[in-house]
Each structure stands twice: as C-alpha cells, then as structure tokens.
Length: 524
Image (cartoon, rainbow, N blue to C red; front, side, top):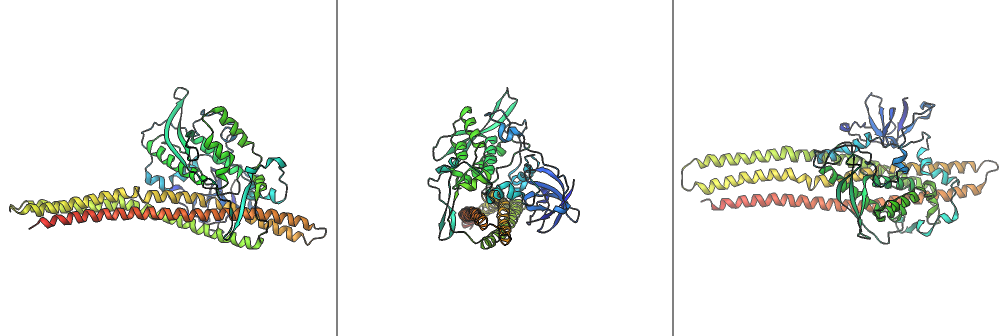
C-alpha cells in the first residue's frame, strides 16, 4: 500500500543505479519498502520513480495506512541461530569459480556496490512511529528510566568513559592501539563441492596470530555491533555480491574493503575494546569456542538502551538548547560533506574515463603522427638522415608511452581516492539516525519542562531526565569529536598519497620528454 513521506535530508541519487535525487521537505509516495538494507522505492511529484534511503524521510502520519506493510525480517539463521562454523554460503549463492570474469574497477567505484546492497534482500523491520529511530536506539527507554539492568552486569571493562578536554568531551583514548590485516583469501567447499565460500586470514597486530573468518562472520559482527552500540557511528560492512563472488578481482577488492572496515573499527575507542570485537579477532578456529563466544555476545544485556548505563561522562549538564544548536550545525556539515563527496566521485569517475579513453587515444594518435613523419623522412636517401628519423621515431614512441601512462594512472591515484570517498560516504550515512536520536531527546526534555508547570508536577523527574539526556548528548558529542579527528587524519593522508602519485606521474612524463629531446642533440 502506497503512503506519503516527507524528505528530511537532501540526497543526490545516482540514476545509473536506479536512485532518486530528493530534496529536503519534498513529498514522496512510497511504492515499495521491501527493497532491503535501508532503501525504499518511491515516486516524486513529477512522477519520477527510484530508490532513496529510508532514514532520509519521515512518514506523514495523517496519510499513513492503518496497517503498514512490513519489510521481511532476516532469517533467524542469519541473525542469531546459525552457530555452525562453515555450513552456509554467506547468502551469496553463485556457482562461479575463481578466475571467472567480474565487474571492472570502474564499475565498482561507480556505485554498483550500493546497487547490490539494495537488491540483496538484507532488510530490517522498522517502526513507522515518528520517533522510530529514537525508540529503536533505546534512547527513549533510557531517557524515561525504563531500562533496567542488574547492578552486577556492568563490569569495569564494560564502562564507556568520556573525558573532558580543552576542546570539549571525547572518548577516552585507546590505551594500546592496534591494526588488522586481512589476507590469503581462499575458496573452500564442503558437502562434496555443493557449498562454497571464501575464507580470509584475519591477523590483529596485538597478537600477530591469524584466525580464519568468512564473510558471514564479518556480517555477524556488524549486526552485533549495530545492536549493541545503537548510538555509535558503525561503518557499513562491504556489500554482499549477487554474481561473480568468486572472481579473483572481486575477491581481492572485497579483501581490501574488509581490511579497511576492520581497521576503522580498530580506531574506535569503544568498539576496539568491546568483547564481541575481541571475540571476532582472537577466537581460535575452533567451532565450540566460536559458538560459546557467539552465544555470549548474542545474550549481552548491555545492548541498545542498556549501553547508555555503561557511559561515564562529566557531571556538568550541557544546556539542551546549546547542544541542539551544535548538533544542527553538525547535521548541516554532514549534508554538505556528503554532497561534496558525491560531486568528487562524479568528477573522478569522469576524469578516469577520459584518462583511459580520450587521453590515451589522443596521445597514441599523436605519437603515430610522429612515427609516420619519421617513415616519410626515412624515404629520403641522404646518408645523414638516420639521426633525425631516429629522433622523430623516438618522439612518436614517447607519446605512445605517455598514452599508456594515462591509461594506467587511475589505478594508482583516482581509484584509491575514490575507495576512500566511498568509505566516507558510508560513514556519513550513519549520522542522520544518530542526529535524529538527539533531536528526539531534546523534544522529550522540552516536553518534560512544559509538564513541570502543570499541577502536581514532580521536579525530580525533570532532573532525572535532564541527567540522562546529558549522557546521550555526551555520547553524540564524543562521536562527532572522533569523526572530526579521524576525518582530519584520513584526508591528510588521502591528499598526500594522491598528490605524491600525481607528482610521480607528471615527473615520469617530463622524464620521457627530456629523453626524447636529448635525441635531437645527435642531429647535425
């Protein structure tokens, strides 16, 4: 049943992937909410149909149907009931073999991955309550004091500590930083070859001991982190693949993305130290040990709303109105940065096509012109013709080689930069829901403030709600601070790497031209 929604944030869709470009306050008609993985399909006022992020819209309640069609839940075996080590094919049934053809890098970075996620069927059931994100995150339950956890459930290593600095609040720094390597992807099978999967070696620098993990284990880890840390920015896991999942270039691309994803988690002060993350990294390749840790993680009582009970933050309450202003400023920053990332990706994609197409072809044609000129001059029978004809022929080969350099260059500078931009696109997409949680928190506090003026109001309740709101605010501010810290470090590194490759590229061209110029010194 179709229903109306209002757009909360601008989103620049990619038409090639069936996405719809939407603008804030625009009204859409939802035609299909079962697309999967946080995407809906709808029609805008001009009749254009396409996909858009579910978290970017809110339902117009007076137009919502009395019975809302529900998105299909993920199977129980995928979420929590699958205890076996290697009895599934990661939900990616495809009987291809390593070495088969696969998607090119240019298509990978042109948004095909997001299209795959839209069609993978990986969906979550969501409420149509205006505060659905607030409720789902546990924010409302915690704020109203209805979250109950036994006193002995919170241990010292469960505590999430927020410290106050001269630049504001932030998560306590990681005491022993570490990184991860994802290596040696290997195709394995069972049941006489009827089931196939790719296994990777995951090696944390903290132990230098490799453990074997499949994509389904990474997927399980992502689900557990999202459920446990509902108000943290959990980067999205690399998407599932429909076809070509065993092709060599796809396997290598996935390996790179999984390694990048794990290292992003390693850099988060809470996630990196969490028991579920440590279980994923350290559990030996033993089915019984994996099952025991898996069940313990799935029975963790400090998830969702209970996570806020583990937070220890400065006692001084932040003014809720000031906090709301700062969060709104960050919201605008996220929107602007997301638009900038999309524009950057479009420019890089356009330039990559030119480098591997027009530029390469033009330089090779230019080179062939010099080669033809050399052949013409060679026809003259003078004895001193060879130095000149050889020099011109060398110039022809030089421009031909420059064409090859243009063809190869995107692989060493454009593509890596675009991969990093795609990662940030995923990170930015996690913030609208977190921002919505804080906005809902502000509204709840203001509701309590209004009720304080009513007869028989209890001022103590407002104090309790304000104190809990302060925890949510501090969590949000700490996530924003961490995002900016990592953004500065990441973009510094991205720009340095990009410019070094550009300098090396143009220095290579200059060297070739100088060598060709030197040839003419022999012409008398």
